[in-house]
Image 1 (cartoon, rainbow, N blue to C red):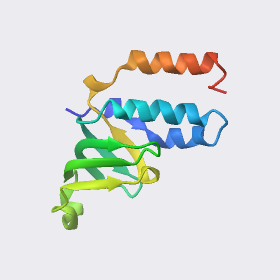
Image 2: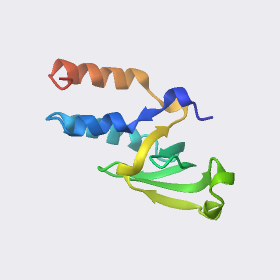
Image 3: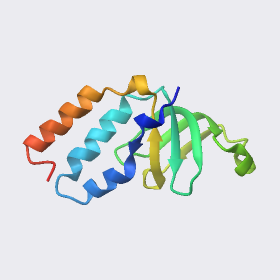
Image 4: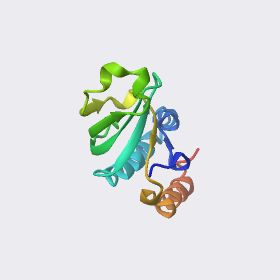
Length: 122
């Protein structure tokens, strides 16, 4: 069950990439997404296309590979019905929705506190 409340806004990450502490936040998200490999996710792209599938891999640029892909609003994109796996360039991602029970909020909050204490949240 994918919960919209557990969505991770990747656009927010782009802001941090421009700062001097961006490397920390990129690694934070990269490590977070690595823990989701093998789990179902829904990826919303900047062109409003939403793809559901199982996350197979992620790289340091937050490019994603999905298997078992289905289009969330298939009636709007019938040309994509035959797509079963795909590679998504990280710069085209707007949101990634993850299963609520897969999000370790304590771990994310602790990482944010550590970054803030080290001056990474400026």
